[in-house]
Image (tube, rainbow, N blue to C red; front, side, top):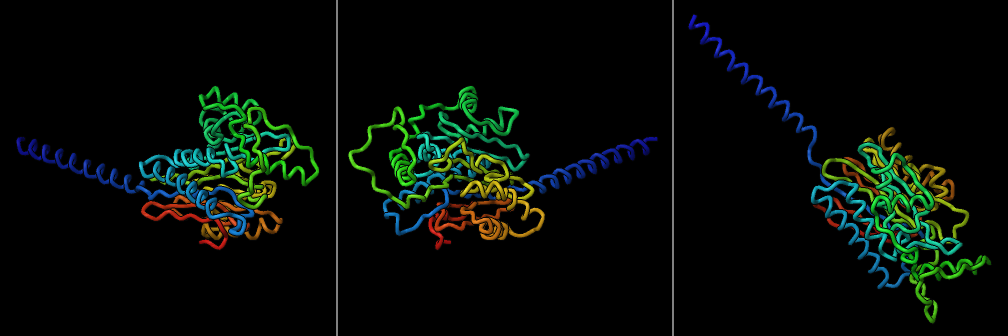
Length: 363
């Protein structure tokens, strides 16, 4: 009897040991399925007629410095274990506050002399998205787009209600004159004079006009279709995309471009890629450019760069559309492609160097 009891104790100990080994192996296997990824980030500041001949060295240096600052801000978030969404928001905040870019404080003017801002953001993990159009009082439209995604049941808001939702969500509100820049105003005036259209009154709250017109620091249509955008991959393997813009200079009738339209100017899915586009929005909308790139990656199995080039250099050019895009995949592929003389752009992967480009003869 005692022998049976002793054998029973041994068997119970063995079973407990075996169960522990099985559970430990399962936990280890589960951990192996979720490795830490290397982060990466890609950024653009708009595509257009951007050429060395029309840009002085000081202005070029300023653009490169701003691109570096924005990329580094996003990279810092990712390096500290932050999400791709947080990195995108941090990087775009810098670009929205920089008058050099057609977004936020550097936005172009409509034909009525107003700044109307659009933005979108999308989470590749769950396909959640938020977008806004016609923003006039919210300092950071990209944060408003994220609030729509996370704090409302909707995907897109437009018009005056959008700023009201922003205020309700605790986002910083500013007077519309905050977005005024003399450079953009004079560019609008020159365009309207050339086209024979009426020139609106100088916006209320704008500073007094300079004694002499400002000298152009780049081609007049360098930011005709400008935007800023960021795509990012975080250490959890999640990708996201964000885009912010001031729209098209001299636009009328409440025109909205591709930037806030999910699938056209902005898209992200962990099953394929994340894309932010910039260019002639009407063409990007017709082609659903951002989703088209991701579909090629997901269903045709081609590389991200091949997909980006096919859409930009074949499909978009086939419609005589101008512009470019940046993109990223969960496995760390980075790409940009554009069919214009230049595109402000930057990218960095964990452990790699920061790469910045402006002209189309740069890698």
